[in-house]
Image (cartoon, rainbow, N blue to C red; front, top):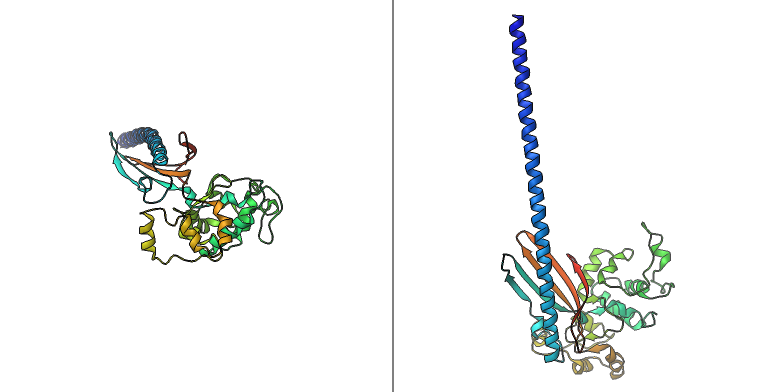
Length: 317
């Protein structure tokens, strides 16, 4: 009886051992398979990203050449020209698609114009930004804080400015830039500005070299209305206005002279306006399998010579 019990125990132990070995072997095989699968997916994703990056650079080069030809053919830049039409999804040879569009960045308010070429606060630009913020239902007081971020002095503008004394008290502390910005998204660094305000303001602002003029042909209605305190409205519906802007440069400088009531005021701001642009942003989206790649390229176009890429960002603006 004792011998049988012992044999049964031995067989039970052997069975349990066999089950454990099978379980461990299964777990090991699963782990090896899963790690191999992850490595394969990771390699495939990295390869697709590299491929998408090269395709995006090709689209960027195509956009640059397109802008170069446009400068030779036209002296103005408006929504009726070929560059303003988006590139529909085009198939790639080995699968995937590429699409894109060009945006005229001179049709936006240039945040770096809040300072003069000497680095001091440009009060006229601050007042214009205050009007833009008010129309977007954002507190106009943010204009002074943004101006303090880009000017060179350390004195906060009265009464709503913000310099080092504000930012060094934050967690984590940091200092005011006191220099021109490279991306409008730097506004997110301002104390309390937040994503909601930025989402409202972002379509109407940009960061370009100081003194870059505004293209009235492509500027949004908000930016055009902000040029002066009292600007007469065009007697057109939004639909008619959009249609007219696809036919020609509208409003051009002559049209703007008619809607700004005071000729003296128009003569004052005319030097900050233009009907052509030198700065465009190429937005490129490449999809290969389940991999999506986005490239934003700021292109600078001169009157003569090639179009240069002066800034690139991936994934977000």
